[in-house]
Length: 339
Ligand SMILES: *Cc1c(COP(=O)(O)O)cnc(C)c1O
Ligand code: SF4
Image (cartoon, rainbow, N blue to C red; front, side, top):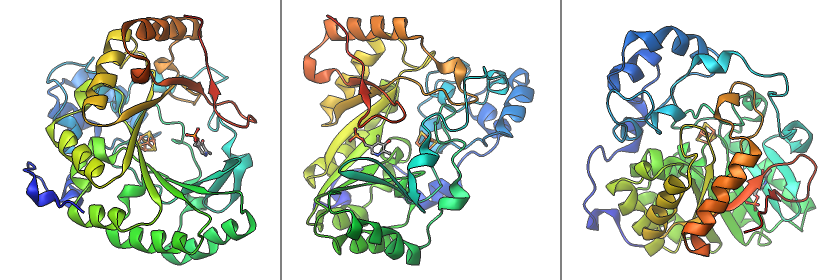
């Protein structure tokens, strides 16, 4: 493996202390971005539904004094969250139905999604799992053994998606035990992490984690989650390089959102910034109808127009697939556009 210490990384270099220092209240978030009291009442009310959480690293990439900053919009609770249209619900993807056993969602033929932890390093206001019953799906280390026996009865599963929450909120030692359990099932050829941490707490990708990933026989894939080019700072560039050098395959998924990335120029910049550092654009998701997040929705006709303009402005491989989750389908629905 290629050690982190060969490359200069700026402090804080201990991800666990960054997590301890994370912003957890509307007051602290508003103070950090130098916004006034007028945002506070609504933010406090909305934060009762889903608490504020954001890392110092992510906040440092926001402009000061700008309530419309596209990174701030993703984490600042707004009054709009308090009034949802009736068709915006707590489980828009009907995940309860696919929650086949504690901590496992088996929705698509060859891959299972495992809920490894409920914790995230950031709380995204648009998250479709903001209402997920994590307390029923929390896994202790000894439970993983039991949970993964599901694989013994499902030989068609050749890929395990580690999700959550964010699987990289687990310590290296907990991840080591989890990956060792997966090693017991040679049918599993690929292990995929769905994680926002390389973007919001890039120092999470430390030497020990790189060594662990490099030691694995299975192909390791990271699907990171970045919505705007401003999220791609120097530390993110460094860790993307290290992951690439250690043969981790990198993809990105984004969500198309009002006030964050709802124009073709921003999407093109995001794709280029990602591709420059070896991350392949993968999905651009249309918003799910999740209670509390209606204000992020870009109507379909407008979304298709933006997507057509994106395709007209850049190389085909820089265009992510426009996808929607439809309950009951065999795969995510790819929304196609005539050129
Ligand atoms: C999105 C998703 C996957 C992964 O699907 P891909 O199209 O392969 O990225 C797997 N399981 C569940 C439950 C999902 O929602
Ligand atoms: S990091 Fe992912 S799972 Fe966690 S709140 Fe954000 S979108 Fe949801």
